[in-house]
Length: 330
Ligand code: TYM
Image 1 (tube, protein in one colour):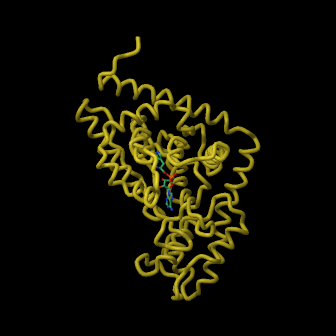
Image 2 (cartoon, rainbow, N blue to C red):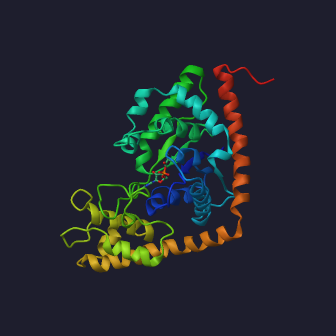
Image 3 (cartoon, rainbow, N blue to C red):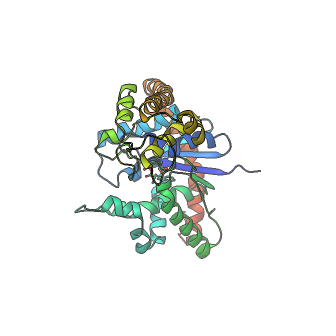
C-alpha cells in the first residue's frame, strides 16, 4: 500500500521555542518512520512581516539545522526551503484566487497579528491561502501542527473541496495531526497566551537554543499560583498545568505519573526538576545543532530536499493548471 503523505512547515522568524518543538517538531520526528514526509522552512510565510535580510538568512539555516538536530533524517524526509520550490508561490496564487475575502477576514491569526497596526501587508492577509498551497501541492494526508494552526487547516480542507467540486476530484482533503497534550504550550509568564517567539519578554518562552543556565532561570521565575498542589487542572490551575504538561512532554511520563511523583510536594522542587528535565531534552539537540552548523552539511540537505520536493510539486501544479484551463507552454 502507498504510504500516506505528511507535510508541515515552520517559519524562520526569530528563535524556535519549546512550543514549536512540543507542538510540532517532535511529531515530525515520529511521523517520518511511517509516512512520506515533507518538512519545510517557510520563508515565504516569514516575509509577510518585514524581515532583516541577514537575520532571515541566518534563521532559515538555523531552523533547517534544528530540524535535523531534533532527529529528522534527511534520507527519510524531504527537508527544504519553501522558496527553493517555486511551485509553492505559483499554487499559492491560484489558491488565493479560490479564497474569499470573508474567509480570510475570519482567520483569528490574522486578526491577532494585524490588530493595532497602522499598516498591514496584503501578504499577511492571504497567508492562509499560501499555506493551503503548501499542503495541497503534495496531496498531503496528514498535517502535524499545534492547535493555533487548526483554523488554517480547516480553510485548506474547504479550498481543496472547492477545487475538486469545480474542476473534478483531484486534491486529497488533509487531516490535521494535533497532539492531545502539548498542542498549545503556554507562555511562562501568562498562561492565557501561547508560548511564542514573537513575545518581547524573553522570559516568557524557552528557546530551543537557550543555555542550561537560561532555562533554569526562566523556569524558576515561571508564574505559578497561590496554591501548593502539583495538580493538572487547566481550568483552575492554568500555569501549573502548563508546567506539568511540559514536564510530561519532555520526560515521557504521563500527566498522572508527574502528579503522583510530586504528590505532597511544593512548587519549588517540582520546578527545579522540571528545569533539569527540559535541559536534558534540549542539550543533545543543541549539541547536534552545533555540529550540523559547523559541518556546513545543511546546504546539501536542503538542495536534495528541494530537488525531490520539486519533482512532486511540479506534477501537481501541471495537473491543476491543466484542469483550470491554462494554455500549456509549447
Ligand atoms: P509557526 O512557524 O508559527 O509554528 C510552527 C509550528 O509550531 C506550532 N506551535 C506551537 N505548538 C504548541 N504550542 C505553542 N506554543 C506553539 N507555538 C507554535 C505551530 O502550531 C506550528 O505547527 N503557518 C504555520 C507554518 C506553515 C505550515 C504550512 C504548517 C506554513 N505552511 C503548511 C503546516 C503546513 C506557522 O506559522 O507556524
